[in-house]
Length: 285
Image 1: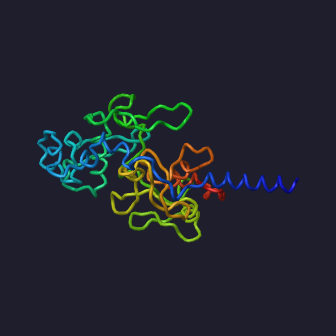
Image 2: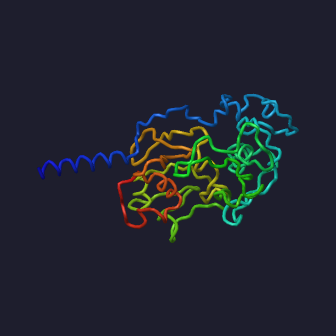
């Protein structure tokens, strides 16, 4: 009888462990564009095939409209503006005067995101200002999607995650990874805690460099605007498709009471708070 009980306990433990793992064969129940299908308009809602904002019926005097990523929204209200993101507004971003630098310029990228997700200088008529997905906690409800008009007063960006040239990611010290930096990217030396973390979870974020030297954060560092529900990549050294939400760029499953995927996602940049930097390795995600 004792032997049977031990076997059953072992089976249950294995099942619990398995349920906590990221599923590399997860299948999204919806189109991965999710809310960015924009009520059925799809890709052309953001990327007008011709004529920029005018191709979406929007009047503009902007002579560079659509020059970056065929952008189909009117970006004029966002030219030459300064947005004070993060703690006490300590991470200001000043946008360019036009889109001539192209979409690969990280500051242009931030500006394009704001042209839909600001709600302060301009309100995008295709948005309701709240997430399509509900917040996965006991309270539920929806999160604001207008950063500059979220109920804290128009023009307040201090409660939004830092982005921009000052939102750099460093190595060493109490709050960072034991990494090195080369070519504007984080590098994991062999045998480092950072290397172990990448085996345990992965490195799914997409850092940018505003100065060509230091890795930093912009909107698409953490969000893949083209996939709301599924992340295709490598997690825990296993390649596949994994569950995510809110367009997060990585395995992100806050609905699972046994998963630490949300913490693991944030720890990619905030390495000092990782298990690995505290000499602890747990079964992850």
